[in-house]
Amino acid sequence: MVRAPYFDKNGIKKGAWSEEEDKRLIAYVETHGYPNWRQLPKFAGLARCGKSCRLRWMNYLRPNLKRGNYTQKEEQIIMDLHKKHGNKWSMIAEHLPGRTDNEIKNYWHSHLKKFSKGNQIENTPCDEELKSVNEAISGDSHHILESSVSISSETSYNEDNSPSFSSLNLCKEEDSSVASWETLDGFSSNFWTQPFISENALSDQDYFPISSFGTEPFFLW
DNA sequence: AATGGGTCCAACCGCACCGCA
DNA sequence: ATGCGGTGCGGTTGGACCCAT
Image (tube, rainbow, N blue to C red):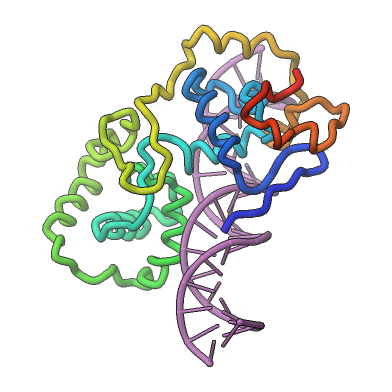
């Protein structure tokens, strides 16, 4: 279901994330937060670009993500908001705690698009509940929004297969350890695709000593 | 059992936006 | 005013899985 891992010409790993990479990313973000996605992979020991790390974290690894089937209520919210705002997936995602824009976008294209031709999905037994939700959306959307962003709340969705985390402070920019970011040599432009590794072209094997991955200090800086 | 088309979703890519110097 | 770095968003794609034949 995912793309096979490979290295591009710059030595950046692309494709599916391994469990070890996930662990590294989680461990780093738990400790340092993510004050700078561009440089994060270097410090986390990941042969990924910053953009890939951000995407992986936001769409898959961050806590309290809700995975699995959508409820009828969620479907209705998506339909209503899409009707109002179009393909503003991030905006829609704000109203669905635990859902990501990417996930909603996928769900729309695979499940809901067919209903979008002027009709909403059929009425359901929870219509009254939906009505109140819709009112909340069209009226005081702030209420829902606030709940959606409180990712450090006690709400747990871990009945699904998402990674489970202990409480996690996502905003640690004040963390003193982050000061090390500033001491780095400058990076050249083209942030998202710029390899964090040096140009003196190590082989792929050097980047990912798979046999020792996770058991030894990883990278060579 | 083989296979071919459809579905689904994680991940990639390009671009727009924002803040700052 | 402008250029640049960092970030976020939306569209697209790759490929595993599912299912009908």
